[in-house]
Structure formats: structure tokens, C-alpha cells
Amino acid sequence: MIDETTLDRAVSTGIVSAAQRDALLSLVRAQAGDRQVPAENTTLSVDDQMRLVGGGNDIFVTVGIVLLFSGALFALQAVLPRDSMMLAALLAAGSWIVAEIVTRQKRMRLSSTLLALVFSASVLTILTDFVGAQFNVPDVINTFSLLALKDDALPMGLILGGGLIAAAALYFVRFKVPVLAAVVAIAATGLAFLAAMLIYYERMVSGSIAAPAPDQLAQVVSSALAIPLVCGLVVFAAAVALDLRDRERQTVWSDCAFWLHVVSAPLLVHPLFILATGQDVLAGRIEPGMGAGIMLGLMIALFVLVALAIDRRSLLAPTLAYFGSVGIYYLVNGAANTTGIPPFALILLSIGAIVILFGAGWQRIRRLIIHPLLPTSLLERLPPIKA
Image (cartoon, rainbow, N blue to C red; front, side, top):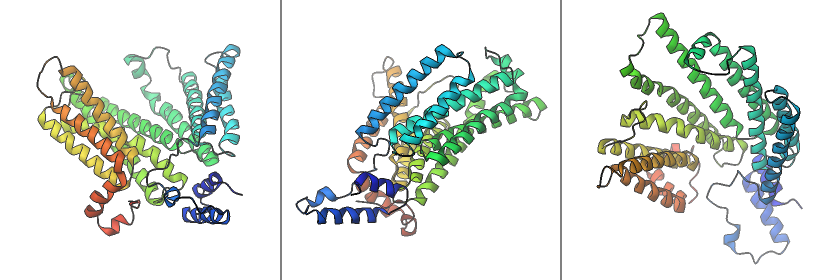
């Protein structure tokens, strides 16, 4: 008899649909005479499926992987030079070999995620050592050493970012591990930021734009926030495209979209917060007044509506965590200077209430808010409302 885990894997790989899986399970239960099971026990959950952990055995194997690679790292460091590329290459090869069993055959989720991250970190280490040797990067990095490397900055970035993206893509083709979507997105964002900085520097050197005065540095840094904002929008658009490709959230593309939303959230939230509330990025001043607090509340409402529309709490969780941490920072620093209620206290209360409320009835809230707001033609393209 095929167990439920195998059927779940068949659904995730597209062999059978979710409806066919449920029909098969119902047929097996009926043939086994299992007619005493209450109807509510066979009802599928309307919440997101837990795709990060595959069960107790998955956690057990993950602990084994941590011990195995920790031991291998210490053993190789005792035999090989600490800065040897061979050390990282062996770890990368080892993670690939273990993944052939853990990921390719057993499809263990948490273990596969950890192995993919080990592989990515090992490849990045190899690329970093190669760049350091190829371009004679000094051990001590400062402003002058960076200026000396400006002519080699683009090829160095292409080797690091492009190499990591290529390695992650190759690993994904073989093992289909969703977390690699986040690795690719982060590497691509780094490349975009490097390219923008080089273009700005070249324009400043050529005289197309004037070099900023000391009192203009904060404005320059704030303007640079447009780069992660644009990258965040691109990553978010890619995640939504994958979500629309799999409305029922049954394939690996939906899991890739989850990780892309996790990456896009901070890329969108931080620049929007700074640009909307006018904070001093360079000085690290985070003391929004009532006007900025109102603007922040509108931003939270917008992110909530978008998360509800696309049915992604992975977009909302980092957003609320960021706003909450900023609020706590402001409350702690302002407690000694005021006895009134800071504006951010209201924001924190709102965030706490939103988290509890949404955790208790996400799909019902989607039906109450999203269903009346959006036209039917758009609702039919978005993930279905299951309550």
C-alpha cells in the first residue's frame, strides 16, 4: 500500500493532483472498513502546509548532518591549510553526495534545505578565495584599498554573484530545493547594487555629477535605497508569478515563491519606511513623529492587503517583525525622555493585535476583506479563498 507521505510527494512533483490523492485515500479507508472516523478528521487544513520540516525523522537526519559536517570541517582544518580552497570544495562535494540520498531519494525537507545552504556557502567560499588570489585583494579592507580595486570590482562581482547563481541553478536542476530561490535572489540583488554603485562612481569621476558634500551624504544614502527597493519589487513580482502558476500551492514552484517573498519583504519594507517617514539613515535616527506614525500605519495596511490578496503570510511576517523591532527601539530610547505615550506604542499595539487576529482566522479575514474589494476576474487568478 502506498502511504500518505508518498502520495504527498506525488502531488508535489505533479504526478497526481490533490483531488486524486484525496480520492485514493478515501477509497483505501473505505476498503479497510474505516467508517468510524469523524468527518472533521478527513478535512484538509485551510492553512499553509508546513513545508520546512518533513517530520521527526527529518529533524533527526538534520542533526546528523550538522554533526557530520561539523566533524568534517574540524578534521579538514587540521589536515589542510585554513585558507585552502580544497577544504570548501570537499564540503561542497560532500553536501552534493549526501543530497543524492537525503534529497534525491528521501525528499527530506529540512535536511535538504540545510544541505543546499552548506553547498551554497561552500561555493561562495571557493569563489571568494579565488577572487582574493586572482585580484590580489589585501587582507585589510579600507577606503583606500577599495578605491584601488575599483577597476576590478565588476569582474570580481560577476565571479562571486554570477558563480553563486550558476552553482545554485545547477543544484536546483538536480535536487529542486526551494531555498535556492532565495540564494539566487540575494546574489542577484548584490550584483545590482554593485553595478549601480559603479555607475554612480564613474559618473562622479567623469564630472557628470558633483561629488556630495559632507552634509549631503545622508541624502545620497537615502537615494541609494531605490536600488534595494527596485530589486525587492522584481523579486516580489517573480514570487507572485510563481504563485499564479500554482494557485493550489502543491508544487515546488510554490515553495520557491515562499522564499522569494521572504527575501522581497525586507528589501521592500526598509526603503519604503525610510523614504516615507524621512528618517536619517546615515545617523541611524529612528524617531518618527505623529505624521510619520500615520504614514507607517498606512504602509502596514497596504502590506496587509497585499499579503491577504496573494495569501502569503511569509510576506507579512518579516514586515510586522521589522516594524515591531523599530517600534521597540524607539520606545526603549525614548522612555527616559518622555512620560507620555509615544506614537509608536500605538503601532506596536496594532501589530500585536494584527498578528493574533490573523493567526486565528486568516482565511476568514481574506474572505471578508479581499472578496468584496477585488473583481471576480482577478480573484479567479489569485490563490482560492478556502473558508
